[in-house]
Length: 233
Length: 233
DNA sequence: TGATGAATAAGTCTGACTTTTTCTTGGTGT
DNA sequence: ACACCAAGAAAAAGTCAGACTTATTCATCA
Image (cartoon, rainbow over all chains, first blue to last red; front, side, top):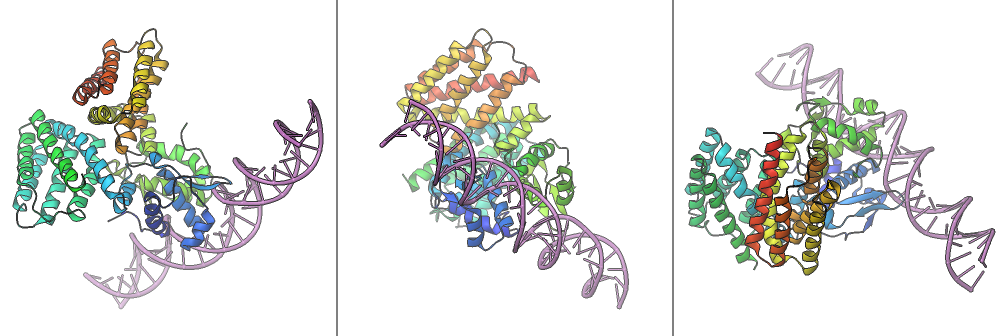
């Protein structure tokens, strides 16, 4: 579950964060700490802590005698998992999903190529198990089971790449896949072609074939992008 | 300069953040807010705000009756620009620089391909101007001038990609390029081949040739990676 | 073994005070 | 009458200290 909700300041963030990322307060809007503290019925110290967190995400800027001003979207720390969750929960979810999928299409092929070189036998085994799980859940509306193995599959590859920047995108990929399955229109079983590609990708990595792994991942990413175009052209 | 230093809590972060990211406190280490407040000679409220920021970066976790525990590196928000700066300033700078360069090698080719499709005439003009500036500063130890145009060049491409996730990596690229020029061994003029590639890349984007732009960027990235291998094989 | 209670450190609240920045006001000079 | 600058007032964040609350852990005892 989300890291928030722990402590009063976390509960404030749970409503203030989504409100800001949703654009309820246009850039340049000025909030006052005291007023916010009253509105959320918390002490100033708690509200100050919440503001500090928002500030560290570059969502707002706190200046003396002025107040807490909302920063333009272009300055937000959009890689912050918390910010990503807030935005995915908001109204520009489709736009956000597209941005993230494009990001995936850039990262994952390279990560898969590296994984083919660096994956340990254990990681290869887990990858094959995940692919097997995807196959087993690919028919008969077993979307939850499919999703579970799909997430695990991509996470193993990102971790096996040996690059910590790639590895930390595992959560993002999980959010994207979950969002696609649960919130978007996805009543049908996954495309058989996608399932096959995952199986073949697991093979390629196990065999250490980097260029093939990269190519297969590009095809998977291409499919994900086309899926978005079908939903919102 | 950095966004920190504003306020007492910022000054605390300026020394506590680098200390944690440098690994001075191994994962699982327990800090106590009161003790830290004493050590930094600030009030508890200020220290609490600092801890909240560290917590939002997933560097630490604060739990009742236990204290503030340092999280394992694998959980840090490594995309937070502040965390990136702290780590680049620390001792694992080479490792960090390599991770980020690999990230660049994945992102920038795709970004360049998108830029070829979406760049506005103004962006194309600026890109050409940047390439020109690079050429003009490519000989005679004018490294600062070269760096300036190099950063601007890559930033324009990332912005022109039209993807906000890519666009926000402009600062990261700037840090990497700055680090390479200033802190690594780089007394010589840039490789002529690299300069030529940038000029051709600007042309390709202006002409809307996505696949060519992507290919040229891959070559540039390849050069950057080889440069790292030469420095630390 | 499992429940009870004490110890502990974070969490919360309040109120007073300080500091920085901005706006206003008033005076000066042309 | 107008531009301009300096002094002061006002506003909001920033800081601090102290008292109190609460959840969690650990030790003790039935």
